[in-house]
Image (tube, rainbow, N blue to C red; front, top):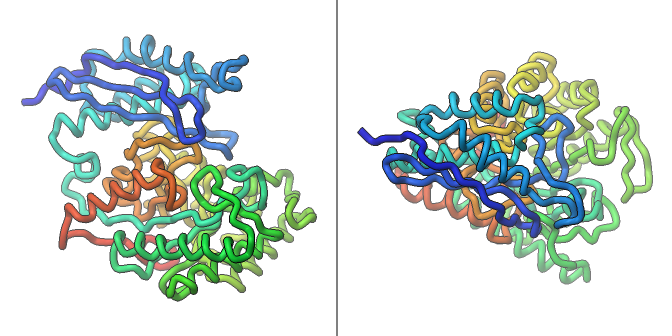
Amino acid sequence: MTDTTITRVHGRRVWDSRGRPTVEVEVTLACGVTGRAIAPAGASTGSAEALDLRDGGASFGGLDVANAVSSVNRDIADMLKGRDASGQAAIDRGMVELDGTVNRGRLGGNALVATSMAVLHAAAAAARTPIWRYLAGNQAVRIPLPEIQIFGGGAHAARRVDVQDFMVMCPGASSFAEALDWTAEIYRAAGALMKRAGKLQGVADEGGYWPAFDSNEEALDALVSAIADAGLAPGSDVGISLDIAASEFGSNGRYTLALDGRTLDTEGMVEMLGGWLANYPILSIEDPLAEDDPAGFGIFTKEYGSRCQIIGDDFLVTNAGRVARAAAAGHANAVLIKPNQAGTVTEAHEALIAGKKAGFGTIVSARSGETEDVTIAHLSIGWDAGQLKVGSFSRSERTAKWNEVLRIEESLGTQAVFSGWSALPFHH
């Protein structure tokens, strides 16, 4: 019998993809194995998500994490030593109780999530099994449909365009590997298209091209052209996915579109997005309305939920209770799952389960501030989420996750099942 007692918990400061400090945790077990994980950080954040504990002051623009690291090395380490790493739910519950705040503000959501994921890594290593298999047990799993950014906007690109992510998803592909092949061609075609137009200006936070467009529609037109230039069929092979991140430019039922120079009410916002759905092969829209506009979510979902995935992110903040309430009210048909938004692996899984119970699409997601940590690739498969959103097709903190899923798909051989269209709630 392998001894999975936790003997050491160690936190340190490391660096994320924006050159900002973040928290890494190593958990060592009595049997000698170690699990390691790193907390990511978001740019556009929901008001109710777990708080990244930052130090403030002059150092690193106030973003240092010395207090969060100290939380790991003192309070959390003291509590976890001697506990059984195979009891993930009990460990996560213990950390939440130890923190004692609604938003994880005392110890830090970044301290909690890095520790929670590190415990998972250690337990899987002790079981000598990949994390995805450790999570799945004997349950059947699918390889997720990737959602991949081609143009980055919103908070990820100095608000150069209002929409935060212009992405592609390839439900018509026969495998994850083929979906990535298609995306590589689309990404390359998009770069060539922007170069020809004299608009190639580098990349945004998540590796998508910097959006040097004069309107939001111009970005959509460019994306459709890139899909066609790559020799693929927009709408059947490949669809568009948008993250509007409406809370970033809207509140109290008013939405200010800086690029278009206009302000819309809820009705106008729904009408504008409905026009896009009519004119472009859009399969998925995330946070189409602001987090304080549940009525708008309801109107939009009622009108378009039968033909489009409507995802709550800032609106649902990976919270099982919010997901259940949204499902009952008809306010969305999909949920984004971000472990650091919830604070622990267990809470993120509970939100995913609530989504599945409601017949929602479930999408495990990275953040704009990422690292080489590949935990979410395993969560997306082990939990049979069906979809994975990591950012773009460039920059190694993104490709680390895509490449990990490629390896897992290959390891399954003929047993690998790609989710494709089955991942989308309106195709259930």
